[in-house]
Length: 138
Length: 406
Image 1 (spheres, rainbow over the protein chains, first blue to last red):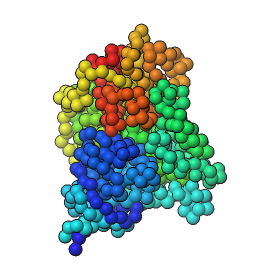
Image 2 (cartoon, rainbow over the protein chains, first blue to last red):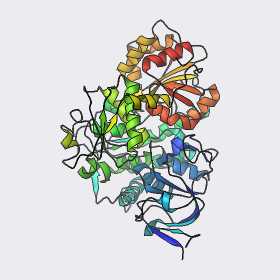
Image 3 (tube, rainbow over the protein chains, first blue to last red):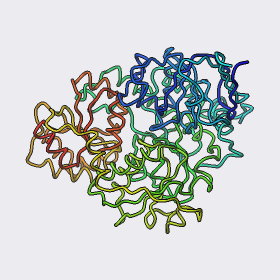
Image 4 (cartoon, rainbow over the protein chains, first blue to last red):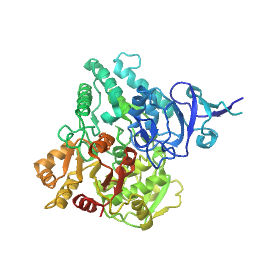
């Protein structure tokens, strides 16, 4: 049986993918090179990592409002993460995920997901049911 | 609206708002007096502009906004874009976005200082503001009520005239949760921004409300503007209280809504020094000096003109000032723009530098080392490949003139 984590009801479709985890925060404008698909802010813990088609697992959203447009824009070019998991989302990333049709969940019963999910874990996110399954661990 | 009887634009808007509202457990909607849309073309991209054009192609009855809806800075200023190394393709997509917004009935104010220049929010007024600096100022300094509303959500609010009632629309989220005490008075705009950065880094959550004590005198609007913008940028913070200064905090107890007051984190000389040191690069060549983020008020521009009188920006350095179209008009009329441009500076209207294809400008102009008095900008701009340094306004001008960090 995979490990199943309960969270608040989320946004977007059910998806599966591989986790990219860091004890850090997120802004599409501040942190990403959206042309090359990598984290580009030197101070970010995922600096240099490719994020395309990964499930980002981060603590919270920070900074500006641009991410609300940018998630849809990078999705249209095939340069988006597959989904985002936060300990606690802010309004912008929730709005951006809704606009982009991207899966996003937060508020886990067991606490901070960056401590529960490991880099490289294979995940299935069910936003409508408020569930995240870690498929490669029992 | 949801059944589509009021058109496709309003149906999309309400569906979007319900999805977001359910995520945040909103129980109903609240009417808003204004919406403010962040939608620079760098963020929109081709996809976003096409989506706007799709809305704009509907009939006016279907697509025009219902409450006054204004815009944040744009990606391009048509009068200065070539001097900044921006391209005709950027200007073309900008023109398309503007045409679409105008068809939707959106007022192209192109400003992130609308609380200084357009229609200041009022205590208790519910709003749908984009731009984190606008939200934190409206909530904290004016006592209005808004969440961070990204471009699509702010536009949705303009179309429906309401927004889901969650977050900072509710009393319960407006109580102080973190406590800071200032032991060293900020001495200028860069210091106020640095203070916002220090408190923002320590707070680091949209859902926390910092209370800042120890303020010796009431800061002016530009000081609070830089403080709030940096606080929001570093910490994703949407509301702060300053007992004795901001309207919901006549006392410290009121700031915490009568709840237990947490022990205060002290902020003194050492914290300021550490903040500046993390961006220091003394002696380095300076490629570009930027005054913006947020756009400058008329009084900031007047001060800058005075600092530049009789001096000349170094030939290897570019000095850029960004302000709102209304302030630019006033600065033109009063001769301030002429004084800054005589010294070799560029005064751009309706943009705010980091929302204006900053990476492409850096590549086109060979810019790397950037000096600014904006703590918000030093936080953002490193992600675009710049090496930023924070300095006082006077020091920024000295850097621009000498071409080196002094």
